[in-house]
Structure formats: structure tokens, C-alpha cells
Length: 506
Image (cartoon, rainbow, N blue to C red; front, side):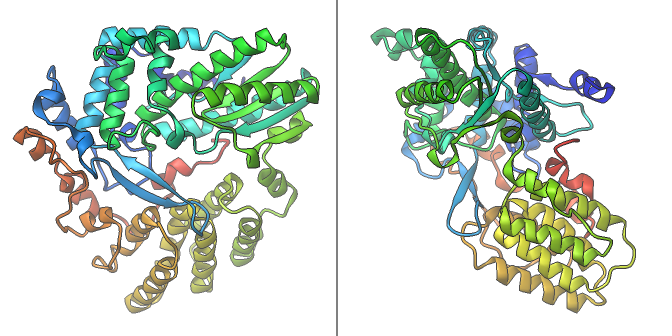
């Protein structure tokens, strides 16, 4: 371990090393509430803080009716996944339900039970979970640290295993969050036999049932799927996936399979074995374990036996390392990245390449043909929506060198019209508004978060089920916009503003 890696370990902390009050403070951080990268003028802190004060030592049920009887309790920001018709709903959970669930989970008795349960779930020595939520140092975002952890935990450890194993398999779970069976949360926390007993199923004081009930309240009573987009839900998913790890370990013991190692990062599995036959046997057992939980492996993303180092590094990254990664000429440099994005849309290596280009561009004083560069960056974003925040940062710098305000406005309108051809582009619109607001503050957008920025009255969360006037007052959508920060935003997006999209090596 290098000195830098050692310092990283000292300045970040797993949630499993926190006591109940520390975990509560961590989960109530705005960044934990919303893991979606948003411009800095979005701030959920005031609403979360005010709701927490109202609910302090009180039960939400005493201040409300049945939320699962109402539509629109949570608010979903739609994120286009492939530049076509695939999309992901990242949910902003109703603040009252979010805070209530955090407070229930972090009651000392419940929290200690959960920590002890994790000790059992993590007992299998051959299966490592590397995605438990962590809190970074104050000067670094937690999500950026989590992404960095992926690189150090998965890729680097995978390469190390080439000394011990000959083959590696790679697989993940299909639509994991939307498929998790909410009743399986109680199985994970209390054990399936206990949780399914008649007395336990009716026991509303069991934390597994409390979590299950809160999630059903957020989702119109549905028992399939948990909201994606918060550290709290990442943590809850780790309970279920950790339970699957434990079940898999027990099943492999029965099968007499003991020489293997599995690295899991959320729903992503790397399986290291000495022979392809053992790898296939483990995949079969994993499939059977997941079926019992209502989950299934993604056949399209399951790779067969490969050499360990080849499997450790993703195909897009291998291609990027073998290719020309830049050019002295800015336009040729961006075209190199564009060509990589055509071959590997939405790839992690594309994100890293754009980050490095943005850092370079940010330091350049004289830029030729800015509209051509804007066109290339827009096309990259069109086909790889995941990287739009980075592309918008690049475009913001290029807009600043256009000669006139009229020229800037015309280009912004053209970008808006191009991206409007895509469906489910809420996240893209948020970042396009970030760079267009200093020039055209009233540009029309479909995304309701954009309406809030424009100062329009918007209701994000349906609160009709809440009987407490005080809670309904503090859950005011307009309060998530920091007007002071909005008025002071720099038209040019700086590298620090998009830290979440940090290099894998950071």
C-alpha cells in the first residue's frame, strides 16, 4: 500500500464502523439523501434538517395517514441510459419517509442488531463485499470516494488474484434495485425462518418489517423494488445481497466447493477459480440463491472463463489503453474521445477521458473553432447520456469564448433542440440548465427540478397523506434551491464542481 492509499484509508470510514448517532448524521447528509450528481445550488440540507427536528422522538404514523394509498409520494428524476429508450428512475424519496426510516434504522437497539447481523453476513472468508457505504474526509465527496474504492477494491484486487487463480468469471444482477423483494429485507436482518414465522410477520416492532413497510409506503404498496438514488437504499440493498452471499457460501460448502474467491461490488460479481468447471458450478449455485430472493443474473453481462488479468480490466478500458488517448490539437483530442464513445457508449473509460480533456481545456486561453468543439461534445453526450455532466462542463468553457451573447444563446438553443430528441432526459436537462442559466434563465425545460430553479411553484412530493401542518410546511420543494449560490454561479463549470466524475485513480 502506498502512502497515498494509506492516507485514503485513514480519512474515510465505513458506515459499519459508526455508532447509531454517527450513522444517523451520515445518512441525513444531503449527499447521502441524493446520490445523483446535481449542480451545487441544489441543497436538500434545510428540508432534511427541519423534518428531522419535527420528527425527533416522534412517530411519523402519528402525523399521517397511509402514504401507500397515494401516487407520487417520491419524485423520480429520469436518466437516459443509452441515448435511445432505456432509462433509470433515480428517486428523491419523500423527506418525511426518508428521515423517519433513517431514525428508525439508527435507533440504538435496531442499529446494534443490524451491525451484528452484518458481522454474520460477512463471515464467509471467500466472499468479500467492497461496496458498503463509506464517509470520506470533509474535503472530498462520499460518492467520489466510493467510486475510487471500486477501482482500488475490484480492479486492483482482481489483478492480484492472478497469482492464486487461473480463471475469472464476471456477472451481475438484472435490474437489481427494481427487483429486490421487500419482504426479503426482514429475512436478511432476522433470518428467513424467524422472519417468516406467523408471529414475526405481524410484529411491527421488528426493524426488518419497519424497513419493508417504509419502502412499501414509498412505492404505492409494491413489494417488488426499492428506490434507487440514496446511500440509505444502497445500505439496505447490501443487507439483502449480503444475505445472498451467506446463502451462497453455505450452498457451496454442501457442494464441496472451497477453493474460490468472490469480490462483490453491489450487484457486480467477480468469481475467481482454478477451473472453468468450478466457475460454472458457482454460477449455477448463485443463480439458485438469487431465484429464492426474486433476483436473477444478467445473461448478457455474464462472461465465461477468462484469464484473470484480462477479466480484471473492462473491455472498454483495455481498448482505451491500447489506443491513442490524446493529441496536441484540441479538436483532434476530442475526436479521439468521440471515436472511443462510439465504440463504448457510457463507458467508465469515456468518463475518465472526458475528465482529463476538461481539465486540459480549463487551462487553455486561446481556443480555435469553439462551435466545432461544442458540436463534438454534444454528440458524445447524445450517444452517452451518462457523461452529460462532464460534456456540459466542457461546453460551458467553450461558450465563454464565443464572441457575442447572441451567438451563445443561439448555440444553447441548438443544443437544447438536439437533446430534446431523446426521451427521459431529466438529468441532462438539469445540467444543460446549469450552463444555460447565466445566459438564458427562462429557457423552457420539461424537468420539474428545472422549473424550481426558474422560481416556478412546483410540488415534487405528494404530501396529501400527511396530517401534520408543520411537516407539510417544512416539506416545501422551493427550499431545495439555494438562491444565493444560484445567483453567484460561474458560467464556466470548474473541475471541482463535477468531482463525482473523478478519475478511477484519484
